Amino acid sequence: MKVVIYDDKWSMLHTFFGFIAGLLGLGWLAFIAYTIYEFIEYLWKSDRFPGDMIEFMIGLAVSELTKEIVFVLSSL
Image 1 (tube, one colour):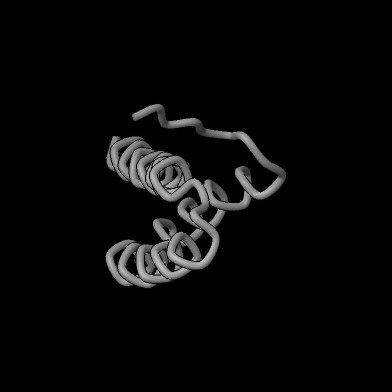
Image 2: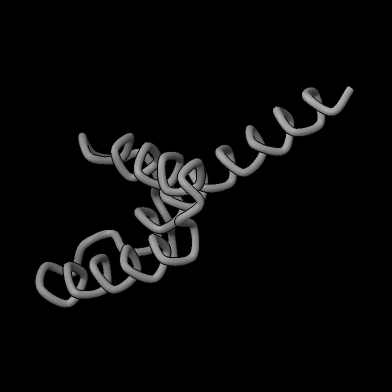
């Protein structure tokens, strides 16, 4: 199965949503809600579910990394 990421105009929004959710500390809640939303959209349109989830997870990972870097730098 080929997974394509950043393939449509909404791709950056998926990453941005993951980033904001991570910064607000809503990572798990947003992940569950986003997974349900994407799965329902996938059932209706046979859309690009795996790619969209990877885009969201990239944003979430970058936000967690950003928080960790800020925490480490502030403790110096």
